[in-house]
Length: 260
Length: 295
Image (cartoon, rainbow over all chains, first blue to last red; front, side, top):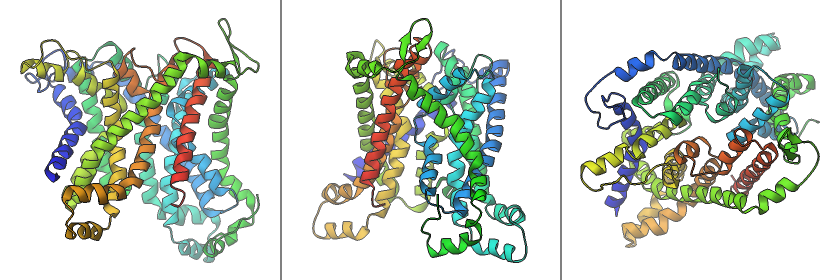
C-alpha cells in the first residue's frame, strides 16, 4: 500500500518536471526536431536564436513592459494598500474585494473586454493598452503582499514618529515605507514575474509590431516546433529560476511563496 | 460612507486619521480611477455588447435583444460547447485529485529537507511560462514526438499513437498546470491532521490501507474541495493550453470567445459567451464562499 503510493508519487514528480527536462535537453540536439535524449550536442539553436531580431525585440518589449508595469502597479497598489490599512471605514472590505477581483476574473475575459474597449475608444497605441492590462492584473498582488506587510507593522513606530513631530508625509517616507521594504521588494518581484509571464491577456492585445515574448512564441509554435523554441524556452526557464534564486536570497522562498 | 464599528486597537490606530476622509479617498483615488477605466467600463461594455445584435457589415447593431442568450442556450453547438468545457473542468479536477493525493501524502510525511526539496519540485512548473509548458507537451506527444519515437524504437508500435491535437493532450497539459495547485492545497490539510488519530486507529488494529481510507482521506476533504474549486475555475476558462494542444479539433468556451472576437467576427455572440463563462466562475465562487463560510 505505502509502496504503491510512493511509486505513484515518484511517477507524478516525473510527470511534473519531465517536460522541462526534455525541453532543456532537447535544445542541444543536432536533429532538426526535438529529440530526447538529444542526438549529439550542438549550440546551433542558440546561435540561430541569437540572430533572430524579432525574438530580441520581443524580449526587450517584455522586459520594458514588466519594468514599467512594476512601477505603475506599485504606485497604485501601495497607495491603495496604505489607504485600506489606515482607514477602516464601512465598506472597506467590500472595496478590497473589488480591487482583488482581477485575480479571480478569467484572464481570457479581461483580455477580450479590453480588446473591445480599446477598439471602441480607438486607442491606437497598443503599448499603452498592454501596459494598462498588465497593471490591472498585477495590482492585486501588490495589495496582497504589501497589505500583509502592513498588518505585521507595529503601529507604535508610526505613533512614535508622529509624537516626535514628524509630519504624515515624512512618517510615510522615512518610517512606514522603510519598515515594510521587504514586502515591497517581494511585491515588485511578483509583479515583474507576472507581467513578464503574462500570456493570455497579451495575446488579445498584441499587434504585429508589438508582441511580448510569450505571444511571439505562441504564434511561432503554430508554424513550427523546431528546437530553437526549446532553446528560447530553456533561457526562459533559467531566467525564471534566476529570479526565484534572487527572491530566495532576499527573503527566503518559504516566506515569499507563503508555504512551508 | 460613515465610520464603521472598529475594534479597540483599530480605533487607537485610526484615531488620528479617521477625521479627514478626503485623505482616505486620496490614497484610494489612483486605484479607483484606474479600475473604473480599465475594469468596470470594459466589463460593462462587454455586458452591453451581449444585448446588441449581429451585423455582417457593421460588427454589431446597437439595441436591446435577448436573442444572443436564446441562441447560446438553445443552439446545440453552444450547449455542447458549454457542456464540454464543464466536463473538461471536472475531468481535469478528478485526475488532479487522484495524482495529487499520493504526492501530497509523500510530501507531508517527508522529513524537513526532503519536504522542501519536493515542494520546490512540485512548484517549479508554476514558474515556467504557459506557452513553454504547452510547447513541451507538443514536443513530447506529437506524431513524431519524443514519446512516439521512444515507443517506435522499442518496437511497441508501428504507427504513431494519436496523442496530440485532441482531448487527451489538452487534458494532459491542463493537469500539468493544475496539479501543483491541487497538491499545495492537499499538503495544507494533510499537515494539519492530528497524528494521534492515525496512531489511535493503528493501535486499534486498522491496517495502513484502512487508516488511509477511513481516517486520512475524510480529513482531507476540505483540502480536496478547496483545490477542486480552484482547479475547476482555472480549467474551465483556460485558453492558451486548449488552443496549443487541442489544435483545431478541441474547442472550449474560451477558444470560441477568441474566435468570435478575431477570425469569425461576431462580437454579440462572443460577448454572450463571455457572460456564460463569468456566470460559471461566479457559481464556483459562490460555492466556495458557502463551503468555507466559517473560515
